[in-house]
Length: 274
Length: 327
Image (cartoon, rainbow over all chains, first blue to last red; front, side):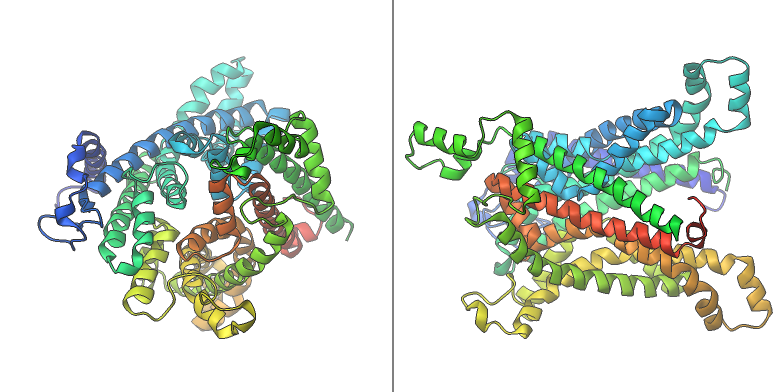
């Protein structure tokens, strides 16, 4: 690896992380439900070669349930992060370019959303939509934009006061033209990094609300559900029900974090050539 | 002095405006739910007739237009009346009071431990950046920020309560014992694991922040000058480091009330700890509208107080604002 520079290495790493995450998401999608169906002959088995993560009190294979659950989490996280990031982009740019009342209103909304503990807000939204999966998805998708909105707003404000933007203004370019030609290209990198770094939050919140019992039904293989079932049977000493699903969740979240950081290193001009 | 008063008044006004907005949003969300509060109240299997349900709905004012219902709710709220909880069969205010005391013990312990521990770890890591201790701490914080609080709680439960049997599996007092007979030690015994869960989750944020600030200070020119004067590392940390980083750290810790509350909701669920977070979960799952609104408002005020203190400290302790500048 000596003649490979850091840029190539980072690119390779990004590629590997993407393959792992996509692999989990895809294998969950195509997974045969039979593979995590109850099997009463194989109840409460500790981890072994046949059942890597052991089985639960109904004899369901925990490895398959965990992968299926993570796949749901990743897909849900993708959707939620996508929606929230677009909201943040629109709000951030509007707030910084139009200014005035719009800026005040958006800043107020950001403060408003940050004033309620996130989990309580998710509960309220889930309740408003009559619980169920829909409530969790919409809740997660609509509540992750405030932080990124602030970042984008600050970024746009900074660019707006640059010399070349001022010059463009004097040349008579309209606000829309300036936004499209000068501002958005600079914000896109921030936006992409922000988008990826939203995933971990979205996934952890999804796991949190489902763990509390909002949203998904008891039989759905979701990490939150798996862990809340493990809690119910915790005194039976089946530690593998707790350990492996959580471990894998942490790993997925860390992979997303690493992905975001690496992409930031690559597309940020300050560090791209290091 | 005038400037300070103006700053306090301005902050307070802005935050009150937020409180109004939050109450409105919570109310809209809750009343727009398809879950019928009357059904939730009487339960699905009871044989109460439709007329009687209508009477209940009329009595609760469910048939009034939403705006009027909101105003009534706010008016009662200002008089200290938040209605009666359906799930707990008690006035909401009473439940909030009881549960807050239980939760406060948990949150305060975790808040202090995570703050002090995180600050100390951050100072050490920042002073000796790139040392082994620093790398260990950085890895630990990185892993922790990706770990859900409830999973840490579950792991602690498996290790210390189930396998080692050192601590009880749940609740805040021994099961089946009258409240008057519970000793303070039994309470602490039940508090250890939930508090530990919350503390571990809270440490990484403050530690990373402090570490970064400490590194910035160590790289500054005044530290270089101090070193040239022959000050020892401890003197530099004490004279130039702590003074500069203590205030932002305290401010950050006050501003973290929102995460603290969210964490306690999860931790309380894991340990069946009868606090506010647990009440919120029960209210949400059982469709207990008055309780849900009550907890939501309470959590908002809780976060609000934290942010307000953070803003005040930031303003009062920051010489630029104290001298009349603007931030």
